[in-house]
Length: 426
Length: 78
Image 1: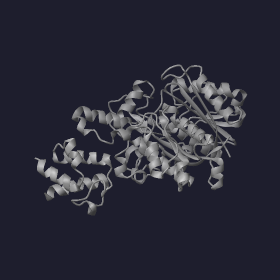
Image 2: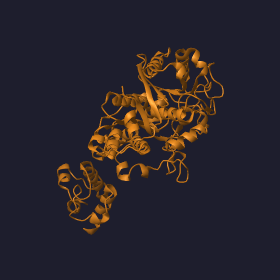
Image 3: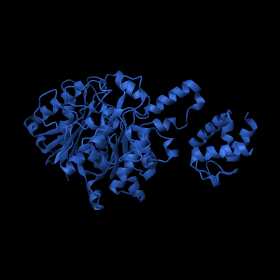
Image 4: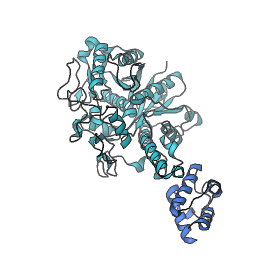
């Protein structure tokens, strides 16, 4: 069976853009949370989120603020009119990852052997909302011809393929908050099966809009008690946690057949060694109390990697900071790891960047890859008093140096969908 | 006529990122200015907005050059 490695990474997150910049900020304990600036949230119960900082000043960014997102660099103004922001973030992160990988598909054969698998959880939510209002108020003739292609989830894959001439498999994943992880896992399998040599994969999301906050707040999924102190709101495993903080952005990787990467002398970050999937068959939004779905996804991924729990030094948890979910996942990890749990580190980087929904899994896989590379694991911010006792080191507040050879990243989504990825040093 | 042309030209430059020099009366949106079929729909919507005219679909289909747009608008606007 072919082995699949990561040769390029790209990030757009609430703590900045550019993988190396984001990684340094994450290890330094930076938080991306703040009072919502993209729209007037004053009549909503939740008035904070983790927004991408823009050079235009939105989301706490600015021209002179390092790591701010420059929309001009990602796409021209003409191109931007054709896309919802989730696509803009996805294309920007993909551009970074592709450049980082050094892969240029020049020949027809190379183009046909390079594919794209970028998903999103919700897609063009704000565009759909705005267009619906316009239709109601001003009628059919005001609906933009770009409305449909700007909102469709698979259009990020479309744009990336058009821009870079990648004519291999063009696909997209939609599994809510597990999207990013499923995209990487599925794309790796496309390479393993031999349908492509290179795949650009991951997730992107831009649901920090009025209808997005309203919807998740109505589902009682969001934290709502920290309007005066947004940076303390995302606090996985802490006794005072009260829900997740909505985030936005994109995480994209370039995956490549190991031999293909070696032959062209590419820089190799890590191997996507294992992938596991499962379904809860329980509830549309609530996690199953026994954590069995997550347990089976993790177990499958570790088995797929040909490893045992003693090989895994770090788990990047799904850990969204919801009262129920965090403990269920933690117990499932404890149960799977048994005695090895005493040597395990586990953190939730959602404490820093919030919950990026469809982008969460791929952003967190990239964090796991960088943790492996640098042998340091990122912290769980705001974790002052754990709500439960555990043998597992939850890496509270500060990053921790660690010698380890494999990492596991969990992603669970509404509908009871679960994905786990195992990344291994090459 | 020239006022309409200038306003049409401004919209075309803005929407298509087109070179000002290339936006001449006989320039075709698709063949000369890089528009695709979706751009032409959006351009017509922008003309409607700017000049307060309604451009029916059958008329819109015939507007293929800058001059076509100027002619239709001059004949039909306020």
